Length: 131
Length: 361
Image (cartoon, rainbow over all chains, first blue to last red; front, top):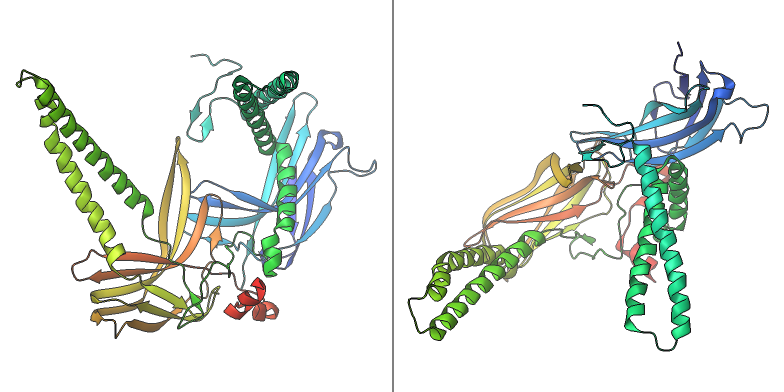
């Protein structure tokens, strides 16, 4: 039986509350997967909407690492880090028909020997507030 | 019933599709690419033919050229759209977003703090006020509704006139005056005229308030607004009016657009509606126009104005006036609420009319 890979995300603010202009630092790691099975890792900081309207999202920070683009000795599964200053808007919002949610999202592409490529993703929401 | 392994023709069910997204995307790419290649090849052939027959380029070459050009445009547009929707497109979209933001000259000209997804205050399009520094732009009335009534009224007036003309023409042209060709259209006249009269009265009610009354003007002490701050608003109205009541509300509303099948629907939900001004039973004359100043406060924990593709959060002042012998008139005035700014940038954030005149020079 094959388990799904584990994606861990750790943010520098334990409360997960940030202010505009704060530096968001994030550490992430992928486990429970063989090195050669992991083909690419995409990290992004984005906001998306939920609620009654059609969903929309906007990427604030994006980085993609692939097995080919990495150095020979680097392992995509290993603990990695990125940081980005947060923008002044839009702020997190929880309304009736509209919610704005900020998150760090890690998406990985895995290719098992017996199957085709498969995608896994994990998001860690955080709040962007002015106060 | 057994489901086929590969379904080439899909059916859209709301936001779901009966075929896989990947099959759909590759199908779209293949179709667009074929169209583009065909367009380019046909274009090359057409240009070479046109060059051979120059200077006598016939009309059919122009017509075929237009068709070929649409093939190229639709093919290229479909191909770009498919790539942007694919996984590869996320990176491209991000890169484009970054570069578009860099190239946004209007932001550079204004030289203000960039606020993604927040409508910017445009000093060029905003007028100065007389009692306060800025006059608020009016965003009503209901142009679509008025236009629909005008079209409805015009159609039924035209139908009535055609029926009258046809009936008279048939009556005069027939020896047999009991012939149905003239009295049958005449029978359809009463409902047609009735609808014309009803639409005309509705249109009169729609236009009456707009044409006969000087518009209410609202002016504000500062733009843009910030949560937790108070602002002075002046209401100005001239003319000759007996006002039964005039109320002004501070409104914040969520506007969401969503797809339901093939329809796009819009829903508006008011989050905040606070009455900020009310006055009853007073006269407006040329010698004593309405000039009232009152305060509004944006709540400290309020959300800023937000503008997405499908969703938005809008702040506005809504005036509801009831006048003697006139229908109730509602007008809305757009406000811009920006997110709170760090203390070190607070001085730059307040825009005065002098700033805008300096920027225009």
